[in-house]
Image (cartoon, rainbow, N blue to C red; front, side, top):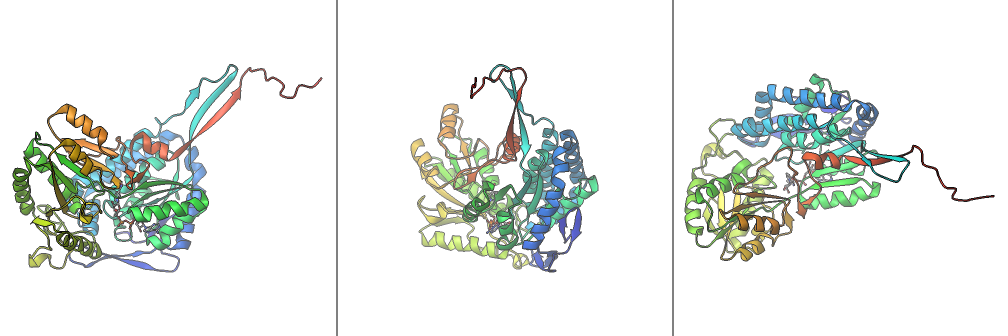
Length: 488
Ligand code: NAD
């Protein structure tokens, strides 16, 4: 297990020798003691990224792409190590890290490896005698700050487009889950990335994160995390006129209409809310269901929820692991208390599991609460295996409930009626809408939110544009320039 900071192609201790204890959320045991980056370490990382900047930006795009493709292959070859590391660090069941997180990480690096030499400029038909060509230029050094819920995948979402577009990177993983990012750093060295192109500095938000946001040598900060911290990042970045990209929280509306295929909707909703213990910004955290099918749906859904196998995430048969940290588990449990105080009816779950073998871990039962849509638990992000239920009688009412929160990230619609589906998709205040499915992601499809869920997009061409800016070059080929100050 790599435990040092990755700066300038080398693994180094923190300048002051500080470390962070990284815990296994299954039993609270010490997984690793990782070097803790502080301000001066971030400065070293920015210096390394600055030194690497010109060489990386001017390298043939196809060669940058080839390195990303090699990295994707190396990640696939390393799948067992990376999946286990991610499972122990985050609590995601191994069946998910092995089948989803790590393969998706490789696929995203591969997508952007292929994109590197296809992201091109244009020629503008301007006035006669001039050639005007526009090239996408890299921004320089970009800072990337990520949360703890999908650490390995977020390496690819953030680094993939930034590197393909010719930027160098200083990334800060979350203090809780730095292990897989450091392993990615090792693989980058193995496949031949030039030193300093990527630098990885685990540390706390108030120190290392803050320094990334304020550092004058960083051109853009791409931040994924909570809305409150995101607002602070945007405010602080203004001091150095840094560009900002914010991927923030969510409160996914998942609307089940009366004509939905209920079996499919039950399964899709369960994946939407319970995958990764509900620790997903796009989680289907609010079920908005037509009153005529609510009882049948909830009967099936709560039966399924009760059957989900909680346990040691390292076991291949485990379907739900622990939450990623004790503090976070306590926060989720406190929201369950709030739900009860707000008059919520707990339909299933509602506590830590009673199984003594899970007592040392951060487990919470899959929880479903019927509650008023105006309740706090129905508008604030809980970020756990916690779903609220609201019923409606008309489509307008369903959409009004869906759009009653400040967030606008992901949302689902379950119906067989094509017109209703497209109409509702148009009305839903969300950056991503899934019809008769939930929580699909693909490296080519733009990912991001509206309102309090932030601005800017990961993935696809949008992500390449996030990490570049246009330069227009005017060439006078044979235009006669009129004298602006005619004399004599
Ligand atoms: P958080 O905002 O507390 O922390 C996110 C990251 O920011 C961490 O690396 C943290 O160390 C750093 N940070 C904290 N304070 C900082 C500061 N003052 N300056 C700079 N960096 C700072 O969020 P979290 O609890 O780690 O993650 C959960 C949140 O992330 C949820 O709200 C979730 O919805 C959101 N999220 C959003 C997306 C998305 O794509 N929209 C994806 C995943 C998670």
